[in-house]
Amino acid sequence: MLVAPSILSADFGNLADDVRAICEGGCDLVHVDVMDGHFVPNLTIGPVVVSAVAKVATKPLDIHLMVENNSFFVDLFAPLKPEFISFHIEEEKHPHRLIQKIRGLGIRPAITLNPHTPPEAIEFLIADVDMVLLMSVNPGFGGQKFIASVLERATRLKALIMKRNPNCLIEVDGGVSDANIEALADAGVDVVVAGSFVYKHPKGVAVAIGALK
Image (cartoon, rainbow, N blue to C red):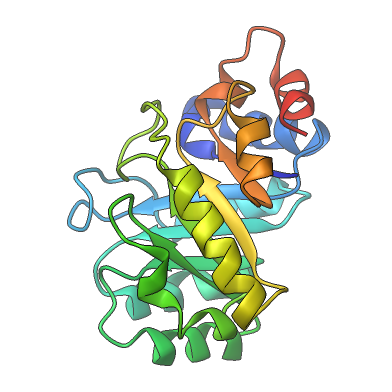
């Protein structure tokens, strides 16, 4: 299991230290939630802050766009050379074109699905992406309760992936903890995003990351 702690739950007054802590604590990716206040009812961070994160992170960035005008935001963040950029299928009118653009920039493209969106909606895009991110909460805020139907969605997605693109990863974001990590693994999930569980763990981020792994 790969672990991608979300810096949305970090202390932004000590952001550099909190990013270093998860990298030293054994994370695999640094998950960055970019929200524009339009696609979701929250506003987070732009390229100035993410650039500062990139300078101290020793693990690759996993940028999750929750925005309108995806292409504009891809252009903003591409110079930071993240490992992944994911965009929401619900917002993108021309997903295949955007996937080609992201890959052309040397970044691994990923598609995100909201809790209500069936995996079958992207069956004919799976062959073109490196990861699919399933939301297990409604996007916009950290600390929400895990929506258990993501387990069925992950199982259905895994079947499509094995048919269309066996190398494609499944990532799950929202309410992930040591209470549901085994069920997620059993459903075929490869990568988990965890914010509150990691940053608010009473024994520290390294113990939290280790528990998920």
